[in-house]
Image (cartoon, rainbow, N blue to C red; front, side):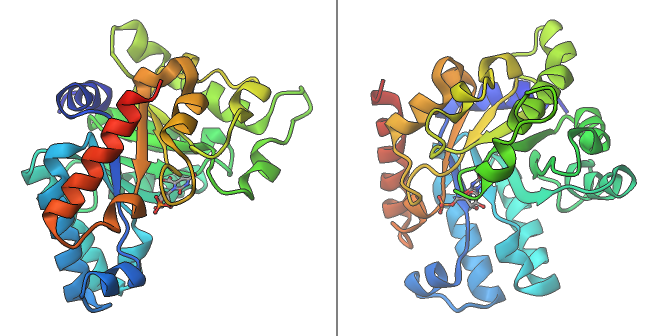
Length: 283
Ligand SMILES: O=C(O)c1cc(=O)[nH]c(=O)n1[C@@H]1O[C@H](COP(=O)(O)O)[C@@H](O)[C@H]1O
């Protein structure tokens, strides 16, 4: 498989940079007239893939909403990932995993290894056991043409307490995470990759935190997933302000902002197209 950064850059060129999260909240299942059960979960997920695949850079199924239905829910996540692959759209499985190195390899095998039914094209990871704990996942991602998105400056207000903290050298925790991603991407970028395989998550709601903390997002050299656009209050202007000169690496992501326009495919498509226009027209 071609490297993730290459495949993602091609997807952005073809279909724009909007990413839509598939987050089958119980309340959304009800709003779509579906049961809060495995059949409802399946119908919701497959409708999202079918309607949205031609209009997004990537789809981002949220693992939590599948796990809450147990093993049958996980089987639906596998089916959604396979349906997205068949529809030729990239998936970022939002599982936010992070563990000690040896266990991390297990997560990497589940979410990043070719042939694993839970492996999309990328997975979200938490670096708060130390950025180096993610090395097995980064290596597995690269070997399999897949990517990772590491939480750096998250969209929730509680994130700042940890991510804005300074370590003894004076560097912020978010800065350490970004620097580790930049190091991980250096070789691929030097070899001419448009984007490295190691991305960061930077919320649309974090205002000027990256600048204030000295986090150089452009230097990361990987894609920047920007959730918090839409339902959490982040606007297209906020996305632009947060990523600054790294706009060309950004993947603004919304879930409820588009999903709320379902269940009709036409409604979902119109909401995605409006979000895409807002992003492109805001400077
Ligand atoms: O990793 C993520 O995608 C993520 C990181 C973050 O900082 N904030 C954040 O909201 N997310 C995810 O993005 C989605 C946001 O959904 P909406 O608020 O409905 O757009 C959820 O699935 C969150 O778990």
